[in-house]
Length: 292
Image (cartoon, rainbow, N blue to C red; front, side, top):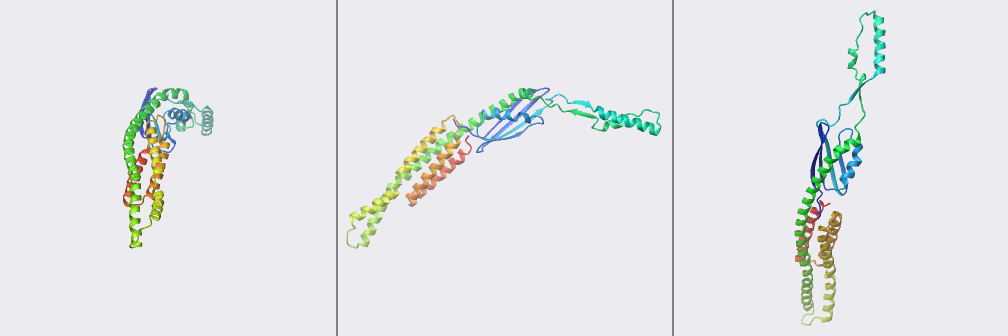
């Protein structure tokens, strides 16, 4: 069954004294397009995240947000910048001797300098973080796929009904072709009779003219191709693999057949049928744009 490209999923997995929270949103796009918002330090996991999501998604704009709820990492380790401390100590001793100060000067005023005590940037262990994060990602992906499948089922049902309307309009246009030829024969007969006044129109000439217009108005080939495209469209609606691009191509072909039929049967009723047909095909195209 076809899938929609619109979906949402949320996943959560414990980590440390908190949890990783993942939100996944997908909308329609011609290609698989990732947009990620990851906490600091998780950029090394982008390739793993894309590989996991690609197992379930083949098209669409993918918006992924990962947040930390609570404390998911150990507190950063603070280290003393010993060379800088020693230098401060030397300066203080020099200041003490210069001013003749007996009291031992303290270092407290200098501790406001951020360079004295630094945060050690070891960074999180990617494998450890992935073991925590992967369950949340998988949960969000599963919920997103379920929504896309449900939406796809609704799209398939709607498209099936619209295909029935399109098929009827193609049949109506095809049946109109024969009537157009008969009307043309009658009008031509009347015009030739007027031109010849009391004479009878030449049957052979009349037959030739009718044959020419009948050939021009013959839309049998277009009707047959349209029926074939519609049958393929229905089969694709039942396919398990992504078929959005194939459906879009079939719609282009159906529009081409409709345009050709409209040019071959240019009377008012036929033209209105073609207008209705193209309107319905455009509605289907709008739906197909959201199919994976």
